Image 1: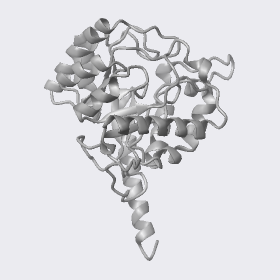
Image 2: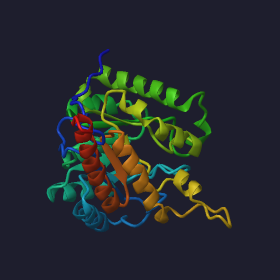
Image 3: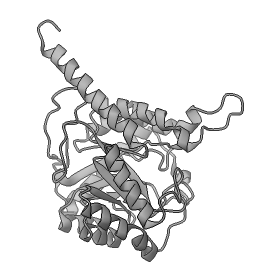
Length: 306
């Protein structure tokens, strides 16, 4: 089955050429700010657990330059226990509703079709499903009916046991093959190609080495022909790389933002559509610099004097 997305050739290095229909096109890699309405997320669990705090945080991210705010009510850190669906709804719906009413482009981070449907009714414009439709068989049909953009991530099971599934021959080849299967499933369910976004799932059933291999060959993920979302922000593989030299202890999550920004620059230069981050301000600056640099590089290539 053909999987041609809504495509435009990149004007220059650092400008994504693939955009999901129905969302803004700023001419550079977009920035998705994280709003975790959870008590147990690995980086900021509890920080925005109260709805009013989550809304205030989301509005602050918009002020810092977020193009999208991603609201999630279920932690997907390794070992996390799922909340009941009623609790997830209680957490996310007021936040989605208030942020959408304030004019934000809101994404809902959920694996449940019921939560996705209710969030779309409340004003969300994008569904970010880390299971790629595997956790809930009703998700793909819902997204086909809704006609809104849908992020499909590489996934090998729920958080409680996913790291036991971090077994690959060649991680990039295996991830690409499994993403292609999910893309086929999405298209067969009736989701239009121009609404699909793919995510290689850094940290989900992957070791630090797997994450680095995927980042090193990110161009192969972009070559799948759909917009790509990358979520490396504050993840454990960055903490391990930056471990304290004396103690060997990983750098704490909140001290990984500079490393996250470095990943953001390199990923934007590969033409990814969007970066999902906790510290929006640094990545918002980084993607603008990357796009401007890429524009100049493109002019140099086209110039007879370049």
